[in-house]
Length: 112
Length: 112
Image (cartoon, rainbow over all chains, first blue to last red; front, side, top):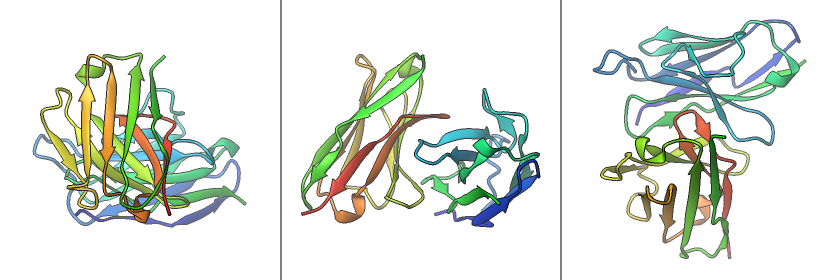
């Protein structure tokens, strides 16, 4: 199985400051169709997860533009340009290039 | 409104069976592959199974292969997960997922 490794696992941030989460895979997520299948999910406390980003850098409908995704191959990043209180939760990356799909361990974002 | 509504969770003894359902609304269900993802209490996300839009192809995580069966009834806009030979480690909230859309989840507890 493809192993997804996130860092850090815990991220205390100051409101209004930027935040960055890294996700690395042990195999390239570049698929034969030319797309790279890396998604980011947010899970707020007590809620179901929701997808923020698909195919590395495409924001889902309704996702604030302070969220951005970047990367290629095996190395990916989720950035929050200015953290707001509603951004508290756990963030997961997930690869969609291989079966079975696999998730990172999750990064807990909290306010300092 | 686009929505996924899971049901069927509950308490079951080890070795028992349970069938989860997920009713979809607000989109053309038969056009989309559907996925089950689970989350053990206090843990991260684990991909469980996927079924193509027609139901003609399925895939499973190794941990559930041979015990769980995913199926769908496109005439009823419903996704199913038949879970047999349940184990304590299957205890989790089970989410029905369509691309970026997640249901609210249904809790399965396997315990004597």
